[in-house]
Length: 450
Image (tube, rainbow, N blue to C red; front, top):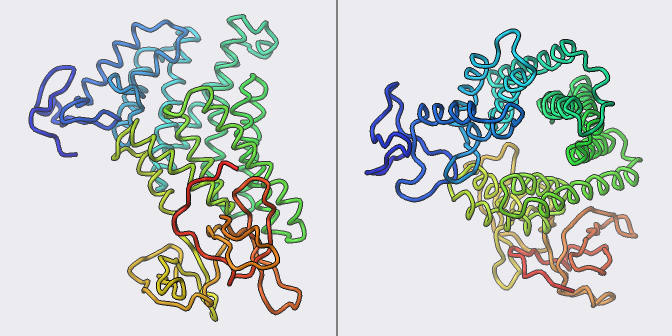
């Protein structure tokens, strides 16, 4: 980070590096020439002081100075986040980790471990070193939870009155620490291909879901329910194409659950909340992965603008939103006769020629791709590609309607291909359309209110 002239730590007012030789940092959502800069050591001292002033039972007050900037009230990110939560654990262990301390002191140590787990996952670093650190911290947290349950003989605390101190402690212990530990162990295996790893992933996610349901954390349980449903349905699709109808229904159900969860958080916290933006991006990724690319693009366009306003253009969340928006805007096609994948860029000659780049390989390497001018009748939109109908005679009311390709079907002769198009406008039924009657929508028109 380039530190502008005149920038100073807003705690000690020093402009140079601190006593450990570490420079000023600003990895939050503060903006401006000099606002928000601080020494990480000063941030640590401030957080320690705030923790000592917090009520024993107030874990939110304990966590906030370690995870959120005191100025912009937004989460720290990148390496600064890791540095602070690591300092938080050292502080909590030294201050509250002594044998014989009360149950709330134990909880503060567990809270510091939870903060580190969250920060490690937000880092989006999938190296073996970070994976090993995640496992170490998660297992440490689970060990502390198990030991605390034994020390205080908590087997019946879940049955105590809900306003009792025992129930509230047990709820946090299980929901915030045990639940997130199993949730995190499951997420570490997300995307794994081996049968054993996938079974282990589902086992941990189901255990976390059961814990969330047990202690009344229904929002978290519903979110996991969505993830489990979508993953299971996709796995069924890979294993047995005959289950396509049931699987499609399961995927649609999972998508609706994800939408409901996002809209609930939107109504609860508002559009400018960091949590709302992050969950909105998760929902948008799911939309995109299921070829609901128009809805995904419209949603990410809003989320990117909100994140840029709340966090600034260089914030990690804004960058993630911009990267997802770029994917949503890609118009992917097949080029005949080889059916190789390309990205369509624009039309020329009144739509007779389509300019494409490719062939597209994964992982994508733009240096290996070339630009071609292809006759439009040789370009077939792929799943998720935004299209507009034109030249339809038997169903003229579909001309001009915006939709996206969801599937491919053989025509009645068995020699041609029809594209299953799902339309954005409410009340317009999906239809099978020939590629020659579809025009790629490189820019989405304003959404119709009809």
